[in-house]
Structure formats: structure tokens, C-alpha cells
Image (cartoon, rainbow, N blue to C red; front, side, top):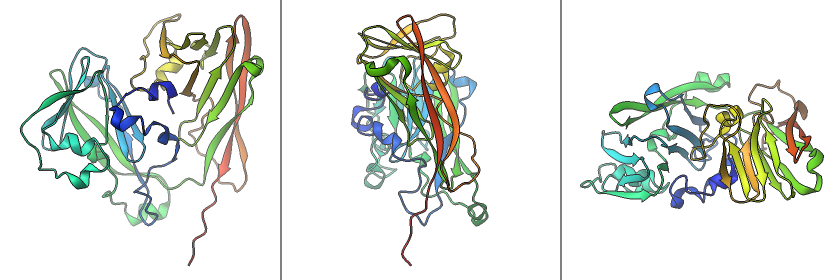
Length: 338
């Protein structure tokens, strides 16, 4: 999951994204529209090619697969439809859309694929649709409804690649593609669930909660103390700072490099601290790999502890820690009537 304050900003179009940001926690695996008779398939994102250096891309599974792109570079990123027509220009500084392109409208709402035909394009009509170089869209090339899964893969019951997807783009004069694959993703026999056991010196001046329900577990912290408080990263570096003005992130934090959401202040190589504001409120949520678990767990019908975790914090000049535990929670199948 991502910093909640950054999700509340229009990373994608406000019409699209604000209403969906908290849905990210709703499902562990995105499948075909809730149809239990179909094999569960999800879209996965591949590492970006060198030609797209500086571009930030995330693939979210909300009500449908959604691409989120942030372009902090000084070059324009153009996104093309399946026929090679440009329909988005992201950056520098703003986002433009070709309102004459059917692809823009078909990817701008979940209802459009059935209402707007693929050949309904008209003359180009470029307009600014977002005042920042960030955009999110439901690209139909990521939809899993028509992805076929061989019976032998279903019977094997293990995750397997079952197809590829590709979205052609151009950054400046350099042609490239955002790519990935489709994967058969059988429903898990269980899910990892984190909980906070002890907040140390934070005591009564902070509310700390684990955010579960996603493949990437996060923490939410609301701070009410009078002294500045630092949350340290995985190598004990200052990562987040909570104070009377809100929350800031250290852009030199190597932990932030791994968890920064698209549209947030990006990681910058360097030593020491380079603080950038991520929230004007004294509350923030972030993905934290220390509380998560992405490995396999031996099947069991009982709850079992996967890991104990510690997140160092500093309140004023006093060092302390948030301590927690992550457990494996078995998922019991729902009984079905014959």
C-alpha cells in the first residue's frame, strides 16, 4: 500500500482515482469480475527498460487493472493505443489527452469499454486534463477477462505465466514500451496479517496500525506528540519525519527507494537527509517490507507466526521502536450448496 495522504491527491484524474484509492486494500488477488467459475488471472508489471529511465510506473489492481504513471523528467511521455494513435502525453509539467481518441475515453472509466466502440475515434483534440505530469488509466490491454488458462495449469494449482501485454510509449524521441505478463494466480490458502504489538515510547502520543488486505503490508501512523518524531528505515536511516507541520520523507532513504508511490517525492541518491513534504497532516501510511511477507508458507490449518519485526523510531532525542508480529492466517473456503 501507499502513503494515504499521497493517494488523496489526484495522482490520476480526480474523477478516477480519489474514489478508488482505498479500494486497493480490498482484495488480495484481482480476478475476473468475481466469477468463481473462471480461473483467477492477474496482470503483472515487468521492470521498465533503460529507455524509460526517470519514469515511475505502478500497476494497481483496484476494480480493474490500473496503470499509474508519474513523469518528473523534462521529456514528454507519449502513450499509444493498439492502432498506434497517441492518446496521452504525460509531462513535462502537465498531462494532455486526445479527446478525439476513443482509447482515451475507453480507458478513462470502467463503464466505457461497452459504451464506446474501438473505432469511434474522431479528429485529434488535445486538451490539458491534469495540471501535473501524473496520470492513471484503466488500459484495456491489461484486462484479464479473455485470457485463457490451460487446464493443466489450473490443475497444477500453482502460479504460472499465461500471456504477455505491452503498451507502446515514447519518451522524447526514444520509442519504448511498458510491458508485463498475465499470471494464473490461484487463490491463496492463507494470507499474511501484521499487527502492532508495542509502540514503545510513542505510547499515548501516536496511533499506529498495520494495514493489511494487500499483497504489500503497510503501516499507518498518526502522531500527536510535541517533539519531532523520526521513523527509521531498514538500514536505520531517517525515513519519515512527523512534526507540527506534517510529515516529510527523506529522499536519500534507501528504504524509500523501494516503497515510494508514484507521484510522491522520488528517491535521490545521496547521504544524509533531504526532507520533502508528503503530508500537511500529522498522519501518514506507507508500505513497509519489514512487516510484510512475500515468500511461501507451508500449508497449515492454524494461524502461525511468520516473523517478528521492529521499526526503530526517535522521539526528540530518545530512541525507541514499534514492534509487531506478522502471522499466517489460513483462508477457509466458503461452503457451496450442491
